[in-house]
Length: 251
Length: 331
Image (tube, rainbow over all chains, first blue to last red; front, side, top):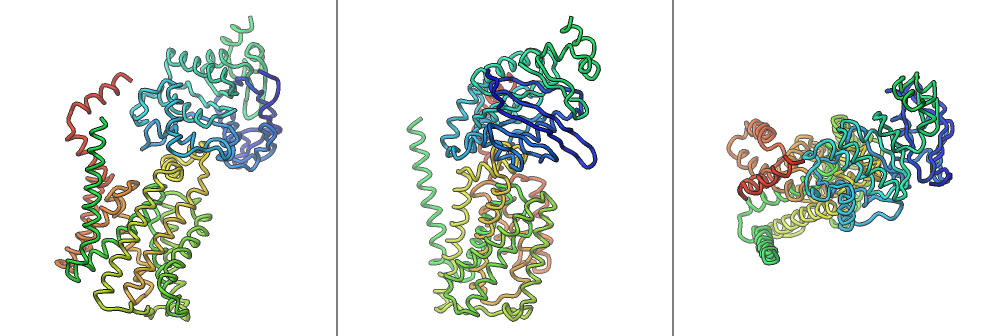
């Protein structure tokens, strides 16, 4: 993991009508790291992720990914630059098999390197294998449990061969065993060279996988640092973590 | 394994030959009335395939898609009447005009979704119809316009329009086949399932939707142009007919929206039915059609092709489905 910034946001701001969902946030995601994004409900985590992936435009500020300005790009442009994401509420493509779902990513992967449908289906088979869905390639998404749907979501994002992967609460709704397996998988993906930003409410998980953590509260960044630093921070303890996690880590 | 796939290929070839014969032979053996009826079936098959690109693949309910039929029809009429253009040149231009019209409209209208998009297309159809009616120096307006007659015997004319509509139907259905096997088709199906998810997977949703509508409109315009020459007399209500548009839409759904062959099956079924009903209940045919539509929505909501697939799977035996259950329950 280097110190080179892969994604930089400066003064990132987004209003919905008169409400500021994200206000003047500066952040950077360093090449090769896992960056955790935490904060109470409504803190602006998902909005920030939507801004990065180009689903909604910035009201103010700018974002630069590997030297390229993201402002004004459509989500498909952002995806082709190498930023993939999952959704908190999984959005599988109904009416397609798992294999077709994932093949789509390979078909539209990075700039000008999209592959024809037949070849993409081959790639999809490999990716499904890596997330442990290799034996259900021809199933439909609605036949899967929520844990497996989350894996499908992850596989689809991976098929884009991303440099930066945004994970929006991939662990919500999973049991402990499933969470452990997913942590393992995220670590493997990270070790293969993919930089990752994770939004997560499962504190144990995010503390375990993140190299650094950014804390948002009411749309502003209130803290940033290693998991240990963040867990000791008074503002973070009052705003979000509460005494149990804060003290446990800080003592 | 290899043997059975060879067997399947052989069966496919035989089936293909039968279908080809069934499509090519009728005008040589059937009466003028039936040739005309089947020419109509082929035309509806082409239209249903064209709308399928929007409705079935992209999931955009282009209920007013008939606007491109009218646009194509009037392009051919105006070019042949005012500029003595040969028919096939006029027809090609009709396809292009309809496609360009959709591309221009699409950039604005395809921001809307669902019912709103549907209503917008109906509005566009009405507006275009009014425009054609009011440009009466060019189009003949509400009085209509006479398109030059086909220069040949009645038999030759019958053959000509039969094979013209057959060619257009094969073109439209072939286009759907090609699209659904390529990136465009996958992109459109993703848009249909979840537009936001499609966009973050790298699908340029705006471009793909406009492209889909452009292709759909171009094909619809070609059919409209052929219809103008076949009918030989045009009035705006004939070719900007929203009832016809709804009928085509229902055909696509009935046969199986999003499948390659479904819309053609739906078109043949509904048009043949409506032809038979037409002869017996001149007053009540809309009522009967309405009842058919309600029955379809209630009992075959995903179309004939899907129904046939489910029946085939059910007949293939319980063992396969039991195996599938096993996979599901251990998940």
